[in-house]
Amino acid sequence: MNILIPFFSQTGNTEKIAMAMQDGLSRNGHTVQIERVEDKDYGLLTDYDAVLIGSACHSRDVAEPVKDFLKHLRVGDDCIVAGFVTHSTVDPTGEWTDQCFNTFSRECHAKNIPLKGYFSCLGKPSPSVEEFIHTNIIKNESHFDKYLQLVESHPDRTDLRHAQIFAEEVMSSRESDGVIVFFRKYLFSKDPAS
Picture 1 (cartoon, helix red, strand yellow):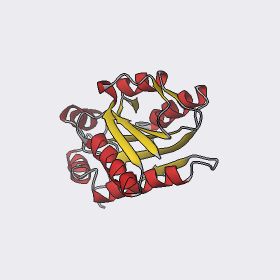
Picture 2: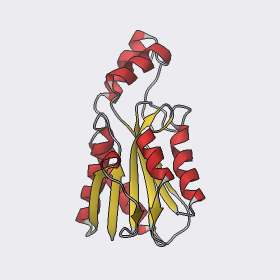
Picture 3: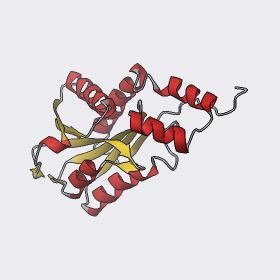
Picture 4: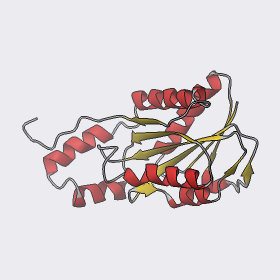
């Protein structure tokens, strides 16, 4: 299969996930092209059997370059799409990331493109995001220190392997109904006793 992995990454987190997916899919015999969404005018993507689109989570949603990419997305009749995001919140299904899946789903549905999967992964925050989290979400110093210890290494080896498994599952389920959704829960407690 011929697969395109366009992505938007500012800190390198989303790029690491994209590269892991490329590596896993290539080892399974697929032809995989990986590119930054902002580097190319995509037009009609009829040469691809699948497009796995990656984004950093910005303000609870996918980044603007990915929104623009999705708005103009045109694929061949048999092409499938999956989305993946990296974020800096320990709750991958909560209010800080919930709009990402909705954007992928809404844009694909509007174009009658099968959305076959959604992958969410923790990533080390940029300095500005780290400051926002400390100022607005995790204000307690000891809780924030625990948070930093948790996010510092992500995406980690397990995250990268999960990304490969997710991409392989998306490709092997091309003909089935349903959407593969993958979230990894991270153990983080704001309770100082834990």
